[in-house]
Length: 342
Ligand SMILES: Cc1cc2nc3c(=O)[nH]c(=O)nc-3n(C[C@H](O)[C@H](O)[C@H](O)COP(=O)(O)OP(=O)(O)OC[C@H]3O[C@@H](n4cnc5c(N)ncnc54)[C@H](O)[C@@H]3O)c2cc1C
Image (cartoon, rainbow, N blue to C red; front, side):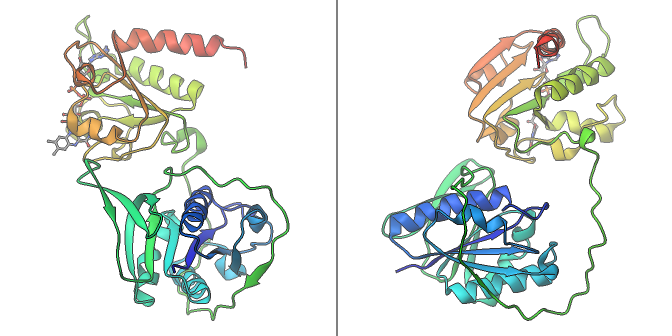
């Protein structure tokens, strides 16, 4: 019989569980139900008292490591907290979100417990034993893994499960005391880009992809990069979409060509870029070649605007392709969005 532990942590505000933790909860509760296995939930944070209320509806043992030392992410304290929670729960299966906070400690904690870990898990199946799904070879092949070694840590990719949303209420919590390890890292503050400068929005419903066509010569023989920049930024502002790019476009930065200044390699989608998860995707001025489209594996509804009727999108890679000039299409789309009542 497996004993399942879901490791969670509070979010940066400190009063709710982080979204990725709520997703791990959905996966853990469903697995425990299918296997009829006992479930524990471990919570790490400065003050976990309010955040645990969301767990009221779950039949589980709730364990917490809290206190000032656990308020902010730090390898030594987070690893010590997770290790203590795993030992207290005596878990054979540990499910944790691949959040920035847990992704860097989970492998170390598995090693301390003599266990094994698999990362980038996208789904958990099985009714008599645990089956973990993972994509390989840049999301081209999906494998189902199972292992005999225990404890088995499974790091879930964010965006793969709906966030758990239970009716909140009082919860009985067992506080686990952790002997504080020596710490060398002191978090003095957080520096992050200004909100207005952020173009990668992992929670957005729509992924908007810009391709190299935006900076190519247009039918009038001229390049219109500043118009492209304005159209793209106006659309991102009006729609709240996340911005992706093809490799050809972001690579231009290093080639001294006219570029869109707000794009970096972090925006690149594809085989050597990211594989984001959004409900819908709209590609513009992009050819839809396989090394790019492989990054669209988890985009449910795909549309593209391209001048080329023979582009990869029209060859079965998009649901709908508009053979049209993206400058005109996006200009009209922005006009419609801006005239929409609030
Ligand atoms: C090992 C390897 C890894 C790679 N990894 C990646 C990766 O991770 N991600 C990635 O993106 N690529 C990757 N590539 C590159 C990939 O094969 C393509 O070269 C790249 O995706 C092409 O980018 P693009 O479609 O933006 O540019 P282009 O191929 O130049 O296409 C531009 C398109 O814009 C259209 N266009 C121009 N003007 C307009 C307009 N006004 N309106 C509408 N359409 C217009 C043109 O018709 C054209 O179809 C990789 C390649 C290799 C070999």
